[in-house]
Length: 81
Length: 116
Figure 1 (cartoon, each protein chain N blue to C red):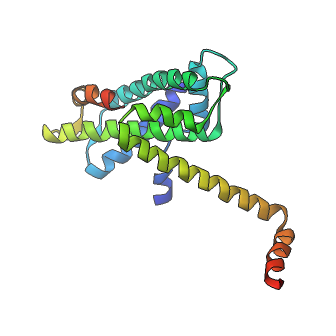
Figure 2 (figure 1 turned 90 degrees about the vertical axis):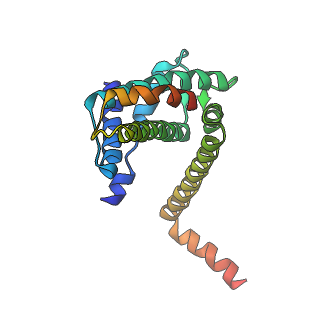
């Protein structure tokens, strides 16, 4: 169970298709390691977003993280990434 | 469909974070984070497409370059560690494959230095 929890991350294929769909040239490819690294980066981004909005909710004594909490942390989050 | 995949992973990540603190994430938040992740990809793609001047494959170096822009030091250190981890994993895999391919050959290789 613990091992399963640690494995939560974006799938390599997802990253591959996602980035490829953004490339201007069709020829451009993504190496396998780059995809994994990218997945890791996005994971960090998401975790950061989650934890920060959670902190915001905590400081406001809310039991549920609402959209306004996320809105408050979003500017700084985008500046940091 | 892609967005759905991203949304799903973001949802799971959020749930995991939420479990620790016993705070639930509303669906709106999950959707917003997924959308932001999507936006993040656009910027990453720009940098990556820019980074490979003469190649047509994005390598880990390019990702690291993209990472350097963000969260300057921490991120680059973190990503550095991660890429090293990846490289190590790769080597391990290679070793494992070698073992699979020719266990006997390896055995003889091991024996040789022992006998000499």
